[in-house]
Image (cartoon, rainbow, N blue to C red; front, side, top):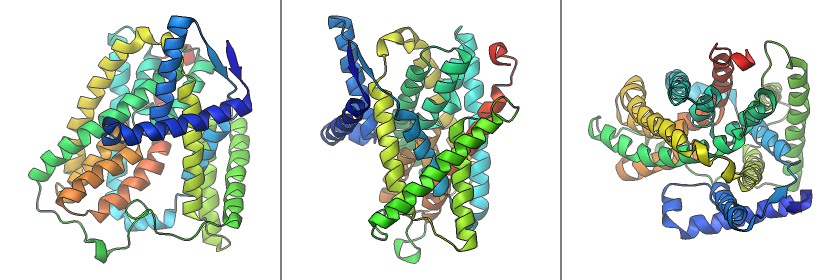
Length: 403
């Protein structure tokens, strides 16, 4: 038995990130499917620990006291980066995509719970293999799995959530390109705006922006700390009531209110690049800690049923993108690119969505609308809608232990 304290765990997490970066740079399949560095490194370490446990009876434990603050800091940055004033430029397309995403959240949870019941599994596993991890990603999956484990007694919830989110990430990258290429061949000619006619978004031109100074970083850390403090306080107030929601959702809401209130008052403008940098650091370290501490040997019996559920979910996502997302968004080139993005964040995460869309636009032409709308929905609206949908599903009679 080897135990790493807080400092040792932090060192291990940073080494996992460096290992993951090296793996993604040198292993073509990881780079092709845009597997995040913390996921690649964390899963590799988890597999090595599995081998050590099975063949040498080794077990390594970690001090995870930093994991939850890092997760909350990530969701705070999502809220702080949500500029409601910019949503006007998305207009009708943004509203329609939110409705389309809401429909997929309902479908994913219905499939997950239905498949779990069919396979004789805990319905909570079906919910974890639904919108929690697929549309929500690793961060949302870890947050809800912690709640399922502590409050509802679902063992191995974190392991199931991380596995589902990881497989979803890969599947989202696999099906996005073929779906988009099929739709482009059935759409009108590419009609995206040329690069020189519009202001580039942060996702299209990430290197453009102001210099990040020490003062800006201190200000941004202060904003994140306020979100964590106020969000935790609100979550405590709601605990035990009908409106109880996870702390990370409260933190996200506080971030939205804080950043937009400051902008409306003209007192301070949140520096989105600094927020994004700190958010990415928090998410990377959090994922590294969550994944490297997985006890894979405890979830071996769930592997085949979980893959069956995820296979059905991937098929449903592809069909939904073709017959719903594409048609609702206008049945044109922009709609095809949006459908590719929806496959990315509907099964994986916003970075996968961006990678899917870039692969299509690099080949067929630009689509400024897609790069404007998808990041807003994939990085902000989906988390709020997902939290509401999950909370409603937990009220169903199929969950008697938590009614």
